[in-house]
Picture 1 (cartoon, rainbow, N blue to C red):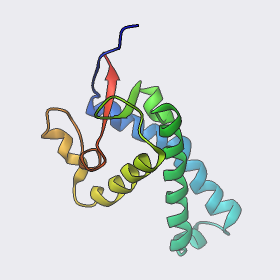
Picture 2 (cartoon, one colour; picture 1 turned 135 degrees about the vertical axis):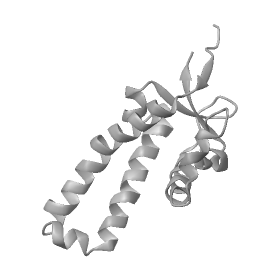
Picture 3 (spheres, rainbow, N blue to C red; picture 1 turned 180 degrees about the horizontal axis):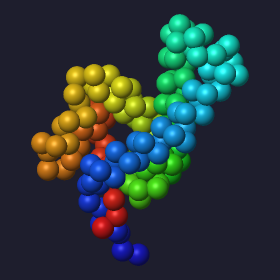
Length: 136
């Protein structure tokens, strides 16, 4: 059986995938935490631990999707895969590390690297040794 070629995914499709993930994974987590676990918006805004827990759980859910399918729901909607540079799925730890790098490097503009690189990798992809690709 012949291997399929992959090309770096477009920046626009990755932004769309990120937005879909925010709606499908993060929004329900934020809603449940704000209104079912805590007493409402004001309690949520003043509880930094709850906010941290929501984003950790989001990262774990997204990492589980990437580990199983090499795609999150948003990436699946855009037909994008996150793989290692040798073309294989990464481990749970590496995908979670990629998420951690995304959170920490986003503050310093790490998501703008893709505009200056031919392979369209961002700083979190460079640090974790992954790439977002689409089938050719």
